[in-house]
Amino acid sequence: MRRKKFFSAILLSLVICLTTPNVCPAYAAGAAPDSQSLVQAKYNLSPESMSFLRDHNVDFSVFKADSISAHGSETEAVPFSMEESILGLIQETDAYGFTDEQIQQYVDGLVNSDTIIAASDNGQAYAVTTPPMSTRNSDGPGFEVKSKSGYSQSTAFVTLPTAYNAGNSNSWMFYTISSPTSNWGIDVGIFYASGNYVNAWRGFYTAQGSGTKSGPIIDEVSAGSRLYFNAKIESNGYLLFRILNAADFSEEYYSLYYYVGSQGIYQSNGIFNRQITMTSNIGSYTNGSYIENAKFSDAYVYSTTGYSQTTTTNTESGRRGVLSGKGVSASLTTVNSYTPWYAEDISIHFSAR
Image (cartoon, rainbow, N blue to C red; front, side, top):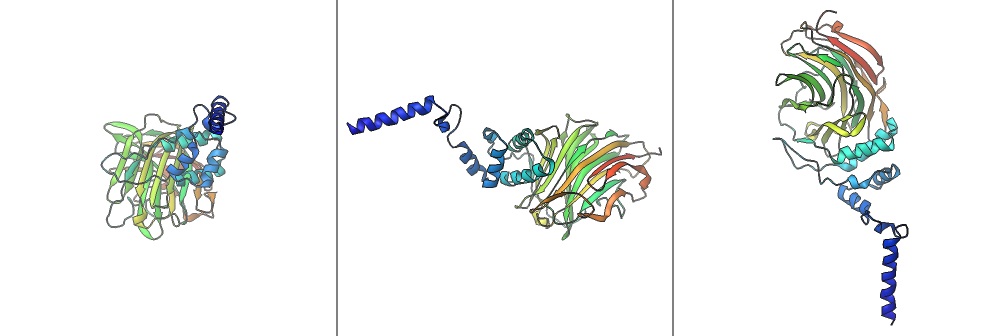
């Protein structure tokens, strides 16, 4: 008799849970039992990351992708660190004051990222295409702001310029990531150039032994489009670089996962050189090509202990401002406006104005 009463009580409790969700919320319609714990285990998320996601009302059902997809000829089994990306997002949210909607979009984009995974190229260290230097000769006119060493991440908002390519010229907005212990760097960003007879914006990277490798045409962008650049060195030695739609962080235009640890670049010593430049394939700067109003704004650098806008104290004094060199006059670059040293509006003309 006691056994019958016991099972009757269990059955009654189950009926109450199924018909009264607020009594047993774990069994509410459409809610997976302990789904947040499953997400935490799957992505190895820390309590800090989980608290942040809960505090900002992130929908945990978006965590469905098994891993970042690798495509192309350069593939390597690399674990995607959702934990480090969320920890980075925590600092970015503190810096920019992201809303819950922006945070949800950001997480959506991370989970559904279609990232190129590239193993590093072995070979002798070198300076990538002679990175533009404001106190030394550069490959073309432009503007740069180079951070001091000791940073693991840099972010900035980007406004694409009006661009015209009269032929044999390229326009670039990018970071060069390097370290003080290695004569090596990798350029990551967006460029405007002709490919398959089409002038368009594309994501790209340039690193040791690889030349410039571009992503597909980004059809969604044009003059005035606002983007969000995010370059982050992870603890496993990989650089994660992403270009997002600034109006909707779930829209990812380009993403790269590249191993830089073998070149002595770590979270503890990273250098981020933000640049706007134009180059010529034939060494001529009079063909009429131009960009007008290329903008970086709200630029930040981050370390494992904090973050700051790029300012006089965390950038190199000799590596800020207009670039020139190799017979290129600084007069080709017009600084429309700038705020030292986290925002600039730059125009460049390959002709007398």
